[in-house]
Amino acid sequence: MTELDQALESLRANPDDHKAQSAFYDLFLNSIFFVPTCDEMIDTDDKGTKEKVEVPVIIEADGIDYLVFFDQEQRLNEWAEKEAPSFQLPGHVLAEMTTTELHWAMNIGTDYNKQFAPDEIAWLKVVVARCKAESDN
Image 1: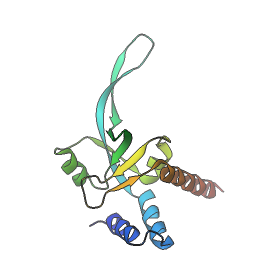
Image 2: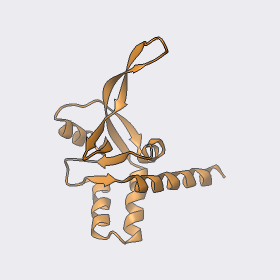
Image 3: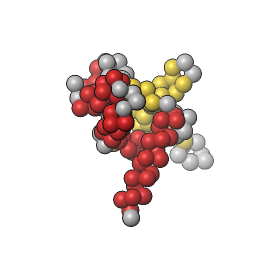
């Protein structure tokens, strides 16, 4: 069980406890996550030139698109049932780069999974922006 797992369990046990919320989200924003990737061909110019690039894996479930990520490489590989390509990003960068319609699926396939809805992600974006603004002053 990781520190993030423990914070998530505490949040689940006490969803209205501001200390549990703060502890989980602070740890989340400052943790490094493994985001699985896949190769995709994209157009690189008007002439139809294509280039292979690695893009984050987005899965669809019940008509909802989820960005998938894991707090441990082992968890990612167990989910993928193989050694999976990925890139690493801290939680605060995930929040900054995520589009408004995307949901998140953290640690799927484990007992410590969590889905994040767009309104929750939007709130995290505001928190990150506020922290950046404060550190710039």
